[in-house]
Length: 388
Ligand code: NAD
Image 1 (cartoon, rainbow, N blue to C red):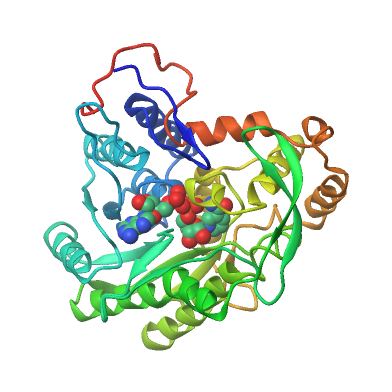
Image 2: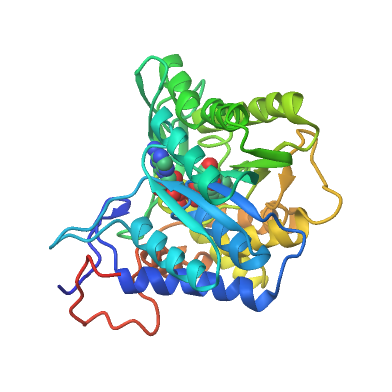
């Protein structure tokens, strides 16, 4: 079949296998060209390994520090006339390339929140890695079933306390308008913490510890977004921010059990991923950020951020903020970049968008997540969606 993008709201329901493989290869090339990361971990578990920051973490550790990896993700298989999800193609492309480089790469497709997948991952670690030195937690999901009582929780990405009115962008039409978002109820806020907070991270570390598969001196990282004052009302001070604050609590609890540097939250910059496109206001901020960082020569996507995390921030003495977090959002949150973003944000209208922001590049980045718009891929070719 000829595979084309089919966009529904903020997702694309098709993915291109050759395009996804090309996307994975580009990220590998980025790391290989920059050279080895000798201080990096050698045995790694990546939770949420198929797209965005998790995929970048698996690629940087495998191709930067020769790590063997077990990955967990929740992706859709292909059918005869139906493409797989992008993450499924990314996983296959990654495994082929990691194995060709002599590395172990085992992927488990299933619900990371469940006890069954935790047990499966422990078996895969025992069989393939023995133990793990690093666990990256990069799961982003709108829903979680608590394995203890079987209750399913749904996150609600909303302000907390009071309604918020903000500029927003329809990335389909390019229209800038105002939206008002009502505040979350206490129940919605608590459910968001259940889904995106630190509880499951702690359950993973407890299960791995009990199984004896954590190496001495292991480390675990979990990714957060603190972000700009421009997105605080909807993000940092909203329900998602509450969930992310719970990661700081969980990190401190893991450190109390396993040692001073056993767990750190890592604050990363805003990038275009499937998870971030679903958050109100964030795509508008993203179109501005892409333009401003490119003009300053500081543009970064997930692979550049995660490469900088392992190559610069985790090598040598750790620089931590007051919450013991590692900061790779330093360029985005610099006074210089934020002042320019705030100035442009105030002047943003549908008419000024093309001048102040870069919606075409945002759209390109979004389509690339699904394997579309990559140079060197023949999109007119007949492709079997099951063939990778
Ligand atoms: P993403 O949508 O690209 O990736 C999410 C991953 O989670 C995928 O691998 C998916 O398969 C996996 N997943 C979802 N539900 C699962 C389940 N039930 N079981 C197993 N795997 C599951 O998201 P992302 O943007 O890379 O986000 C990863 C982390 O990085 C999140 O904690 C996010 O808050 C954080 N972060 C993102 C940004 C950003 O701008 N995108 C910025 C800073 C921090």
